Image (cartoon, rainbow, N blue to C red):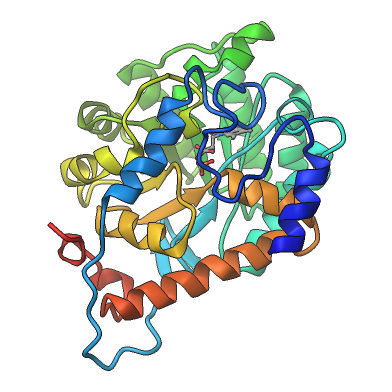
Length: 340
Ligand SMILES: Cc1cc2nc3c(=O)[nH]c(=O)nc-3n(C[C@H](O)[C@H](O)[C@H](O)COP(=O)(O)O)c2cc1C
């Protein structure tokens, strides 16, 4: 991966330093850009929260090939890891980085090559969503588009376009109401109350698709999202880009997962940087995790093969961590593997 990170560093000059650990320290306040909002605390808290959990080692057993495949929201995945939605290469990664079209196509193909799925983003420039849909259509609908909580008809029009592109799962990052980029570019988004969220879920369901609400950070919102009829949630603080000083997602995951257990699929993102982190999130109650910035950097560093290589490295690390904690499969993973 070293060559890939070096190439990414070159192409992202002025936008991302491609640090040895992507932890939000060097890029605090860089939004637009790749950083976290304000002090960068929410981004940094994501890594700190994950680091605060420790694993109980178990080495006397017979497990050599743990089963890390999983089924989430009707998708069969080779591992519980997907690429998080990231949009806006021109203003977040710089004009010299990669075009929106190439970026999205590479993320989708890289994930499919690794046996998993990509999520795609949305934003103030029309091309972010239109290019995503173009690439999703090319991949026969095999990606999950996340649509912003636009006001009025726009959200429904975009959902319809995603359904027409063959998507069977649609996401909405309802926390994007905090994005300074959207405000700066004069594109209105607004909070969704439970009736509005329920109307969106109903619309998606009437087309035999499923809805994921992204940006859930409390058990109260998780319960409301469930009541609104969503099929999945993403426990996320948007990589620390919407509100300064939130906890890390790993800190709130377990109480949220317990509150909605068995009712909706629980996904999580924020600061996942290794297979060990994936295992910790799983132990805290996630069905699957999304990885954001490192997937983008792998794509920018090598649009052809970077992401597949990166995801395969995560796979190897997850397998090793499962063996070292004595886990034969993902169903066996629970809080008991964490040091109390
Ligand atoms: C440059 C950038 C653009 C992003 N664009 C979107 C987007 O369009 N939609 C969305 O739901 N989340 C977006 N996110 C948030 C990610 O999906 C994800 O929640 C976050 O990056 C996870 O944290 P991580 O990068 O530490 O893994 C973006 C994040 C970054 C860094």
